[in-house]
Amino acid sequence: MSGLIQQTSGSVFWFNSRLIDNRENILNQINYASSASFLNGYATPNENLFMYGNLYGVANVKTEIKKLFHFFELPDHIVYKKKMFTLSQGENTKVLLCKSLINKPRLLLLDEITAPLDISSKKKLLSVIKGYKKRKSGCVCISTHDISSILPIATKLVVLKRGCVAYCGKPLTLKKIKRLYE
Amino acid sequence: MNNIRITRWMSLCVHYLLSIKRNPGQLFEIFFESSFHVLYFGFLTHYIQKSNLTLFSITIGVLVTIVFSNIFHRIIVENVSQFVDDVQAKNLQHIFIAPIPVQDIALASIVASYVKLLCSFAVVLILLAVLFPEFFSTLGMCSFVWFGSLLLFSSSISLFMSGFILLYREKVSYVLYVLSAFFELFACVVYPRAIIPAFLRWLSYILPPSYIFESIRLNITTGAVDFVGLSIGVISSLLYGIMGLLFLNWSFQRARVIGSLTKI
Image (tube, rainbow over all chains, first blue to last red):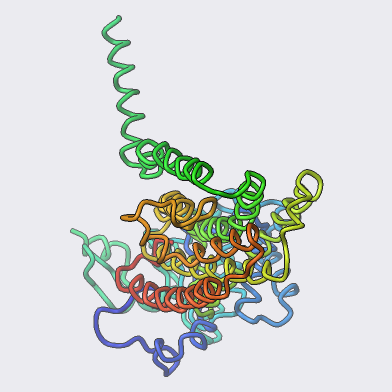
């Protein structure tokens, strides 16, 4: 979806243009976070976000970073002083979420992001997704095993079983999803 | 009881041997490092024995070429370690999803390694000024060409290495040892090309730094400037640069096909 893997057939279109023809412009409107990835371990969260803010050409980077850190309740002593590799998995995930929202993406890709989050951060993330839904300003695509926390706000559900699409359509109840795996 | 201890020792032994089997870097150390040292210092000994030059000329030549050889070691090692750090942190996929072309990522990494090279050179120059001031008497206008062409060649190899990292991830750091040793042996850093056995000499002809180091040696020992050698060194470094850029582009596309970008 972000062009990291070549599609086996066809073309990838985002915002009415082909990804391969308009890569930089499209990627400027996409962002991504995965609990399995990290940022530069030797830099602080603030330094990392500053770098990514500049890569995405964000205006007023410092203010935007402050807003995001404040939203996810990341205290100053962590974001300005601690190196990334000293953070807990939960803190690391929160920083990754801040990074994924730095450019206010129209397409937000989240990979297994809910598992390491505490209840309060999970609520914050859900409010971000609800915001997208309310404003109709873009799309959030989440891959997760933690279906129960995402299901209430999902508008479309794709269930994968052994690498194949087992269901694609409106969200189902947990019971029906379980049945798909039987 | 004794049998249990022996079994434990044996299992630990197997554990350590397995780590050698799975780690090409250690395999290199065992099979190649000692042989490399024998060859390197053997060639140097031959050079000292066979040369008609004074010992002072030979040793000052060795000192200057070793200082200059730091350029390609620093640039390549720093560039690879920067990328490998990002690969190990799984940070590189975030950079590749950002709206920045792959060439710009590689060039930024090379510029960062230039900064590290300058820091390293600042220390080296202070040491030379204090302990070996005769080093500076050998420098002239040509030094800029030597410096520039070695910088160009090492940047080109860095582009190749960045391409390999996209394909093979951190495993490339194992190749780094072999690559460094290969350059040490065949780039004619401390001994002239003529010392290398004839059947291996072609390896030095395909390495642009060998022309530069030959020019440095000639300039230091006779004062002559080898324009032909320098030109070959600069032009072939440039060619390596173009090939490096093409290779980087190709490996980015290839990495998208095989899916290795999602693992970095």
